[in-house]
Image (cartoon, rainbow, N blue to C red; front, side, top):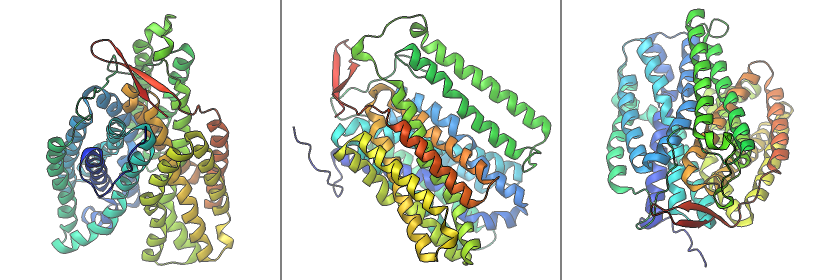
Length: 488
């Protein structure tokens, strides 16, 4: 049966849900990075040191890893409509907390909590997968992710103008508060207009609220192993804030956090084993209900390379170009933003190519492009500016297309677990950014790009173990009957 083309100018049916979703994600990204273009004013208001400014940047992403996992669980259980509305409303209120902070401690706490809005991505992945067939889901997810991600660039372009319109030393506060007000209004709109599934469709939920269900002992072992890097990334972030790094927290506070993270890891491992105790006991899952967790693990590593490198490179690129080519701050910012702006086109392109030529083949192509792109970027110091910018844009295309290709596969693994799959995959994107930025703190930018290139080569090899989605996945309806969902 043929699948109708996507008419993006429509606002009905699944296209309406797509537009509602990417706009929710766009607003989430505006909130997540509403401080970045206003940091100069915030620094002046609170007389912040360079270490305190860097700490705010770290705190902004610190909670994203665990919260993406948590939100993945909750969206599978309660549905995207409720979860998106709640997350937008809560984080919208937190924007006011940040905007009207009267101390650095309040500023830092609100920034830490606002990092939760980064988990919004997971919600839309599940929602889009409910509304689009397998032959379109890659393109739809790419539009959702790419257009939504542009919220960070939109914040950088628009919020200084909003602050300028308000004027005065507190202008930045009103600009940040405006983003919170928009989120609160849109939370109501989204709840009123969105729906978890098309009319007559069933929203499949996991059997238990908690860790992800797996279907074999080998998968369980791999799932347990994957908890460690996520905790390690949080340990690294704590180390950066400790006396060994930015000296923003004391040794005693760091020790308490390390103990808490150890306890969190122990609880996560217990949850993995508890939810899957039947598998641990040797019970066999019927073939029709099995899925391969290796798919999740491979996509997580691929996303750590693609999205993880994107976040790391966007963080350092403007200053790199400024120092390397003697650009002004404005010129360096424009050049650096080219890496993120490619999200508008490249993510949807990655998803569309994945729909058309195959998921595994697309993942292979983008990993080749990522490896070649970063390898070339490691030599940029010897090139004229135009050649360096061209190389950066080409590399960015493959990086963003890789992100789109990953989420062209994630919704096709196990429908009732899509939120959790998106959560763990997305969390590994943040793990990758922490890992690459940590490498950058010890090496030159040229070596940094080379390390990412080598990691992409490893990912290229790992991607060859992917299984091309084929046939159908099975879910159980409330009356006990089995529904088969096409994945190819």
